[in-house]
Length: 237
Image (tube, rainbow, N blue to C red; front, side, top):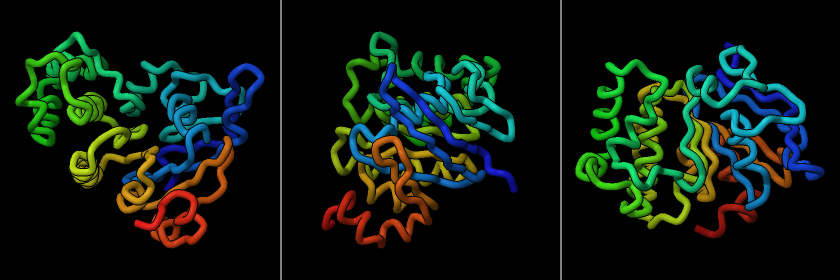
């Protein structure tokens, strides 16, 4: 079976600085794949390039066998790739309900309501806050909204960039339980996450990105057990 997502020798520059230096990876349908790395390794650059927000210098990105390397972000969403970005980026002056409905801009209007109801089911707090301005939500609630907004697109592939950033441990556990439930519905997930232990416990496979290059890859269980990965990313917990 061909991978759902294929990335081949991807190179991305910021001016004269090479942020990604020949990245290759693949994600199979139904998998959760985690990408680990220190700050500045290129993780967010990779996610922004996959979603069409950045244009690569060279390399190829294929989704369901179709090349998406030079497609705009709106076309990539329509193909079935949804993203919850780093920093949440909710529309603070709009309500929770309005943010969710905006997430469905590529969907037939009749289907948006059904998707919003699904999000309210998995994130009951958003239903309670549905009339509240997104900018007044807590950090955890905004993260739920960012993930929910991506799910309203009904993605085949969900890109998650640092979903636990800045959140309390109890909220992180809650969000990762929802992500496990989303995975069980058949949604494929590519996850960039600072909490390496949580990410690898959820994931099937993982990659480690170091200064724009892939340094390690393998089954999540093997990465969790690797002394080198433990020392660099997992601490002593």
